[in-house]
Image (cartoon, rainbow, N blue to C red; front, side):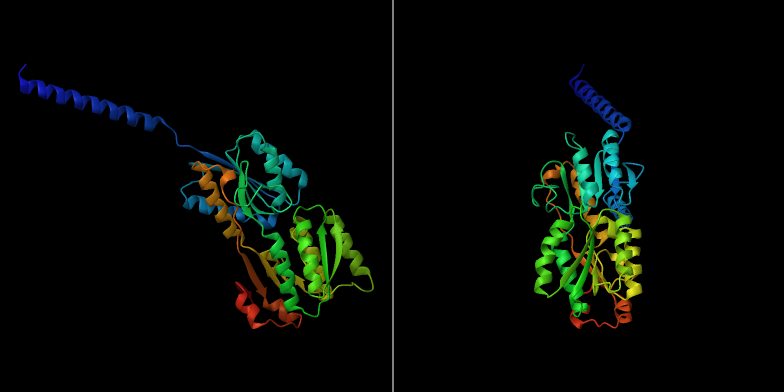
Length: 337
């Protein structure tokens, strides 16, 4: 074999080897199925359900296409405490890749159910103060992170906004679920704040929707309802459709102004709402999930604090003969007319 033939032979051999390697590589890629992420989602109250829409939309933007490389199991609850633990255990039994839970109590149930597993939990609209949900804001620990509910600061801010709109209201009514995790820290901030504003807090504690209706009916039946305004507290019972409807009906009948919490409350008749935007919150949560799916340990990802949005219902304000200062109008993120 001549020298030229030997060189040509080696070149052909190298080409064949490369072709075989390419075929093996392509064959492996073709045969390998893409990773399909399984996400369990639980919403503890209907008012938060639209978080899922924003979450899915943002996940799609990030490249997670439902039915192709991600599937969701969305479980809706409505102030169903027994259901929170049941759903969390179901997700663990199904071996989902991640649990997205909101608000506080479903998140706590998810954290408890995933102990001893490698299933990460991402929460939203959840109180972290006094709940042991995380160890620290900047380093939540374990296999959990999320978007917190800025409860302590936002509840006091709602009282201040209510006072600014209704300065003559000296008796502010609080009706709340005594067992809800966000309540103790909210009261801790409210009590000194109300004292500095010259406001007396009139409190009714409840355990369920029946208690709420009974307390409202009892107050309505009394000769003097004993309150000048209502401040909605951060719990699931007062945020549920039935709970808020009961409070709203009472307030409308007695022409009592309501300081709202979630956005929908301003739409229905509260003077205002001051709460993180659900869709914005869901997008923040999706970013955390993306980081986890890309390999970051959940417990090392800093907890996010979202901005609260002030929505003013000028129609409700005017109907009660109240006025809004220019300063408050300028601070509003949205004005309902």
